[in-house]
Image 1: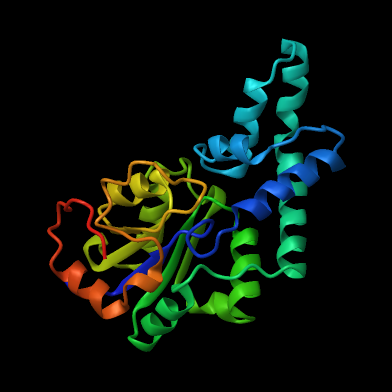
Image 2 (image 1 turned 90 degrees about the vertical axis):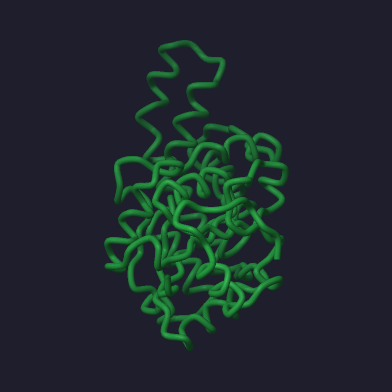
Length: 245
């Protein structure tokens, strides 16, 4: 079936944002006098939980504290996440993160080919806008036909809800779209929504099992839009084993 739209995850896929997120979390903890420290190894483990608020809530449940202390911490999740989001946006404004190799060209080529673009991410809409604007310039948000992000759905990745919402916004069947992800949770979500999925892992998820992907590449520089369209056209509706470009 003809390829008509590209759907992008954000964190780790459009840009390797996770270190900036980690620093923003730690800065928020200090600001709120919690003094937690999410080091790189711990953060890599926490990334298995989709969604910033969900990640904080999960971490609270792992703390060695009294039940009373845990009960006092649980209501702080939204407050912590709001502080983290503000700090993250400031980081993006002051230290612009580059897009991952090949991403900008793929987006430009897709627009030139009149393919629709969409976002399907567990991060907040504010974070999406901050990254897209900083990396692609003012007005770039209008390039995306639909933005499905954050708490717009009841269940986050690996549930397929966010991708189904993106497909509704595009008004296209899954068979005419292609998803781009970097994580196992994202791959499972896209696959469950019936999407051909390209995975470009980052240092945060090296070694995870991406066997369900239709294409696995180190970066999008390794393949161009015409080649992606050919792979998509040859793809059976039920999917196929992961390939490498």
